[in-house]
Length: 42
Image (tube, rainbow, N blue to C red):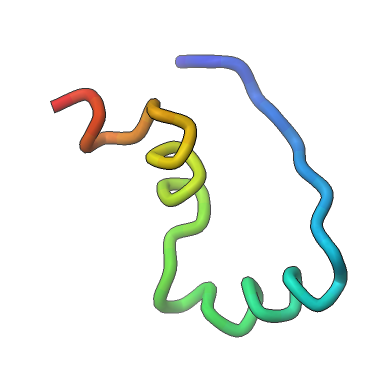
């Protein structure tokens, strides 16, 4: 397993992320964006 990171987002972005959390796996999206997601490993 890799290191843990933390990011700050504007409250408006967090509200939108919360609204979409049932549809979007944000942890996996961020991993893929950073190049370490499941798709990057396969």
